[in-house]
Amino acid sequence: MKTLTASRSDSSGAPVRGQIRESASARLDMRADKKKAKKYTISVVAEQYQIHPQTLRLYEREGLIKPSRSAKGTRYYTEEDVQRLELILDLTRDLGVNLAGVEIILNMREKMNQMQRQFENFLQYIRDNVDQEFFRSEGSKSALVPRRSIHLVKHNR
Image (cartoon, rainbow, N blue to C red; front, side, top):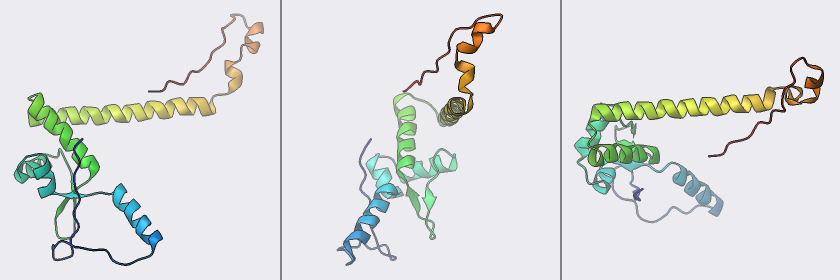
């Protein structure tokens, strides 16, 4: 993933130089918040990925990326938006997929991720709520059909 540089500006759009004096803990809290929610303007993203800003606007119109907006309407791209853009560019530039194909692939990936989360939640439910007596082989000694001991194994990716 490419590294982008976030810029700061005042309400008029002019770059801000220097820092406001505040307590050390407040500065640390502010830095932690900035690291979590870095946002980039359309010009920064377009320049970094060598694409025209109109291309980003087209991707937004097509619903492929959804940047947030400021009160004045400025587009801000998050790290997730940038990662999604990288995937879109890989598909279109490297694999020759058209935008309709990109949309289908992105939707399929989201559905697969959703199914994976549901499956993991289901497995956790089984681990948490299924009575352990069900898995013990002691009760099967008096059963008509003996069964083997069952052990759940956690699968890590």
